[in-house]
Image (cartoon, rainbow, N blue to C red; front, side, top):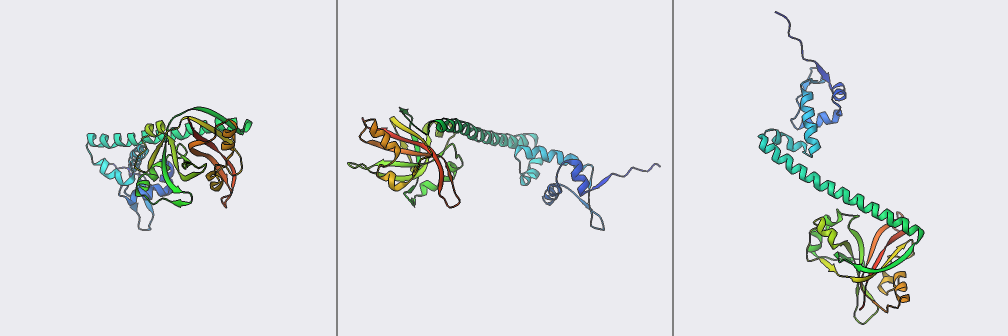
Length: 277
């Protein structure tokens, strides 16, 4: 009777090399019961050739976003059940792609804007401006303790830099000064496109015909004590144009490069001011 050929066995280093994964990958999947290892009397770990097919399947599922903890359950499903799970994973991948594409598009827009600022550090325009949505976070340097803020804050922060850090300038009646609030701002159309969650802590800012002052590398661009008194190059330009006072405004921080101590080295952004009739 002919001898049955022995199934080749491979030590972990060789097996990881032949299958294109790391030894840590093999150990991790073994710990979750997805791979079976043979341990010799001397303590060496061996894998059989048949385990390679399982690794291919695990890598396939991993690329869908299926976690190690989810794999055992998925592999026990019927085809219909497995496809239901994979369809859900693909929907999540589509959301991630949409998010990454939004970041790419915003960076390209910002870089184009920066190139223009290198030629003209200060520029202004008066245009119809779409509404912005503003999520309150602090008043001057004191955090606002409203649970409605923190119910959605992480979701908004996840969309930086599409969402912007911004200072809301709320005009005080009969005075040239402003109440100031830090928060996050985004054009209303962008918020709707990416389905940002809403709460009572979000204010809709309607600008209509607005003055927008674009700036790069000016001192005290975001200094609260000066802005509170209406002291900003953007305000000065507005006065030169013959507008005595602006309504509410939004100071958008597009990019701020700072030292480790928090001292601003470069600041660039936009000041949007709603004009009086």
